[in-house]
Image (cartoon, rainbow, N blue to C red; front, side, top):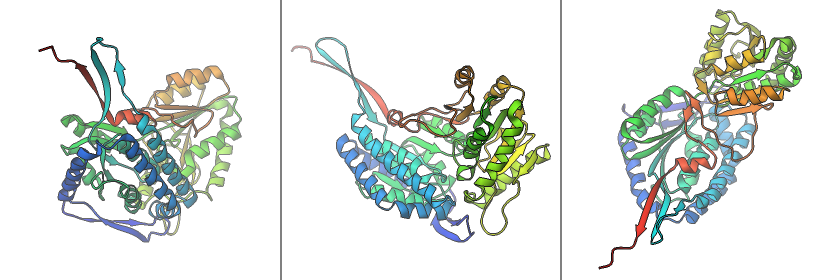
Length: 454
């Protein structure tokens, strides 16, 4: 690791400095892992009910300063404060959910010989490194931290370097309710994450972020036998079938592409519309872009805005047409307007990579089977949405699309507790829901019988 350096975060609305944190040194990383490893000896002996009670107390502490955290998220990432507040509350609810589920996580008794007891017991894995993103920093971290802690693991947490003050403040609120060493916090960039992924005493690396980083983590963990839980990039498709109301479909598409400036893990990244309704849909989508122009905040920073614009410029160079937007905002801050592109094809970056910005690239196709085939032909597999009035098309789509989540006729939504596994380059393992408790534990079989008579 390099010598200690400092990260400066600029307010994406104004360009003014918001927070400065030093990148943790290799020695600081080593000591954090050592402390977490040492604390695991006692933490595993704490009853599940007591662990859950501490996490529930931590949730109350987070809720008490929810507005403060939301304002900090807005300053560091540009996420509008009301949206940020919703993310904080989601994090509070998630902590409480795992506090309830933790004591209920159980093993099994097996039917063996009459004079023996046979059990399958879930045990904590040990030290969990939690590496979280900037786009929803409290909600995502709450799930991974909560599930790890209630199952008896200790944690070393590295929040994103794009919102370090938010990440540290949130984690410190939780750590205040835990014994020393149970939750360690490190500030830093990818060098810190790489150290944690390679550390011998780290049993699990839970990462939400880019595919490139996730691949490196997977390789490192595989080489030393550690577990990796990965939610990586997505290139989520939206299919607009014939027969739907084009204005309603445009509202769904705009919500999926423009909410949080397109900076949501399951944002709509590419749109396939059947040609019989394409003109009406595209016209309505341009109108929706105008509505969203006054709602969205900036992109997280200038570097990310440059990436988004590079994808747009690549599309234009390869023949796409800009119907609205398409140029970075003027003045202070890293704003980018809601953008609608047509005449798109799979060779463009906006169609084959994760843009993660307020871009709605549209490809007109002949029919639903064509849309389905093209949507399925992608190296990512996080989520997809299908808007259709045809029950047969809906049934075919959810079975055929190789994605962890498939949504029919609603771009966002779902019942509480739903959990999925991303496919292909989008990662592996359950990153949320009750199943995350299984990911954070390993199963031991115990066979117990009486000793032979003396």
